[in-house]
Each structure stands twice: as C-alpha cells, then as structure tokens.
Amino acid sequence: MARLARLSVPGEVHHVRVQGNNLQSFALCDEDFEFLHALWLRESKRYAVMVHAYVFLPQAAHVLLTPKDAHAMTLCMQAVGRVYVAWFNKKYARSGTLWQGRFRSTVLESETWLLPSLVYVDWAAVRAGLVETPEDYRWSSHAHYVGRLRDPLIDSAQGIWRLGNTPFARESQYAEMVQQGLSSAQVVQITQALESGWPLGGLEFVAKLQSQTDRRLSPKRPGRPKKQQESMS
Image (cartoon, rainbow, N blue to C red; front, side, top):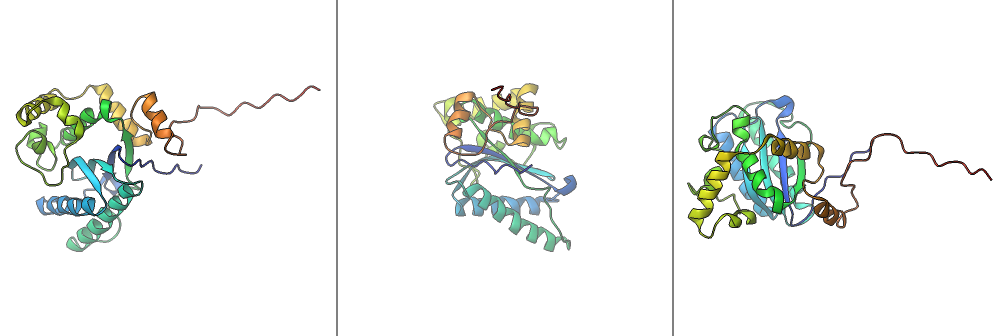
C-alpha cells in the first residue's frame, strides 16, 4: 500500500516528533542539547518556520511549529537532521543514521488542542522518567511560558493570549495548567494523532483542511468494498 504524503498546511500549527534509531540516545550531554537548540533556531529562521514549543529528550524531540508554506516544515526538519547527524557522528566517532524512520507529525486545531499540546510537550520529560515535574527539565520551552527566561527559539503561541491580559497573568495561568496536567484520554488522543498522522481536531476543522489538500484526512472504513450487484436484465 502506498504511503500517504505528509500533511503540511501553511499557517496551521503542527506537532512534530522525532525519535532515535532503535530508541537510542541522540543527545548525551548539555553540549549536544545546546547545539540542537542553536541549530533549530538557525534553520527555523531560514525556512520561515515559527516554533511555539519544544522539548529535547535524549531519545526523542517534540516541536510545535507553524510553517509559512507547504514545504517549509519538511525542509527545516531535513536541514536540522542532516547537520546534526554529521556533527554528532564526527563528535562521537560513529557513522550511520540517528533517526528512527521519518519524523511523525499531525496538524492540530489550535482553538481546541494548542494549549493541551503545549502541556503535553512540557510533560514529555516526566513521562520519559527523566524528572519528577516539568519545571525540573531544562531542555524545553516550559521556562519561557512561565516567565523564568526568554527563549529566542520560541514564537509564543497565539492561544496563550487567552490565558490573561498581562504577562504575569498568562504565566501564572499557564503554570497552573501545567501543574494540573492532562487527562489520560487527552494524552492518548495526542499520541495517536502523532502516530497516525491524521489531523487532531473536530469535523469542521478537518473539512477545512480537506478543502486545501487532495490527501485523504481520515482512515478508510475497515473491510473490503462491497461489489455492485450484477444487472439481472
């Protein structure tokens, strides 16, 4: 069965995930994470990709981004991957790929899923067993959104403005959201959308996306198609 083309819609928020090949680590120390962060900053500017959130784990990375055109996301991901693998292999005297297949991605309905996806990204290090709370993990955009530092990589997501009229109000409200976390159902929905590549949103949102692409945006019904009855005439 032919693989569906990747869905990339200009102006919409995408959730992207990459993993290490065979779940091996592709970042082993602070220098690796620092290089990856600087590389994302450079290539996202080059390809006109707005980065709204990220978490860099030793074995995986999640990024929320909005591409300016249909090719920007893929070009940016390819550039980051190509440069980072060459740098990592040279540093550690190794060869071969770092990544497990192609990156996963889903387009999400910002009105409903942007804020939960920000929280999902913040909690990734906790789910991976690396820290006890999101605040304890350095290599994510969490500190930017709670006002601890200004991260030059981040173009703050528009949905964050709904949380308050002042920076302090928004930061406090966001910190409370993260502390509360997500329901297990929300975690499953976001994870399944990433794995499948289907859009994450309501029927109207999916219909709007469908008007912008020829790519199928929902799975086919299971089973073989019914044969038409033969004419009796």
